Length: 255
Image 1 (cartoon, rainbow, N blue to C red):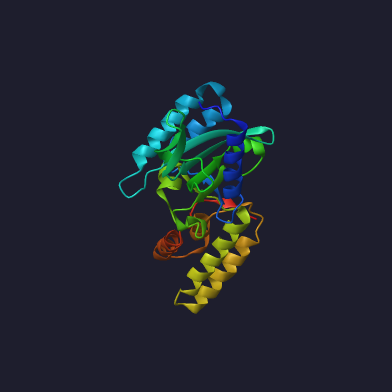
Image 2 (image 1 turned 90 degrees about the vertical axis):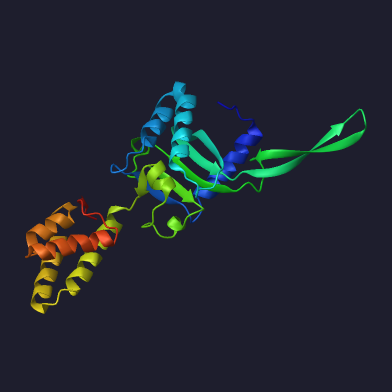
């Protein structure tokens, strides 16, 4: 474990806050369909002060396993932080830099220039990826963290996937219930509009509006299909259409 001087604390704090407050940051949540152990490692780091080094090694080794020849190398930094009264774990990957260091030779009264490999503490150090992960119950929130991936367009299109978010962190982009509800309605309307039979179109649209206005607190595309879509082929087409839009067919809280 590295002890940081006040200057280094300020350096990292500035880097972290600047990245996670930017428009490139978005919310993420752990995905049960992924087999990543990162959620367990991070939970242990936050909950137990004695396992920081051990779990950090495991996180680094797991990232190394998930990277391939197409992923550029870098320096992995893991920091235990405090936000308000609760702890968070920040994992980020820095670009490796090469610099020069000026040292004085007092015997010859001259200066030597030495190359510095893996330079990481300069104002121009580039953050490649950064994630702040929490135990959401400690903050009374619905998501598990924030992510910025400067090497991927995922920040601009949350339907895209990246190895860092999915394979390594075991996460997916988090969407609040209001956004998911709106997407479900819009995607279902699009599917219904593509049905050739106009009478059936009108019938399904009435069912959709009724389903949206019902007292159900949890909506499910599968439940809607089973109750209101008539033929097995149309049910399959509906599910495949939603999957093609990267929309999950599991139930979600209505908002």
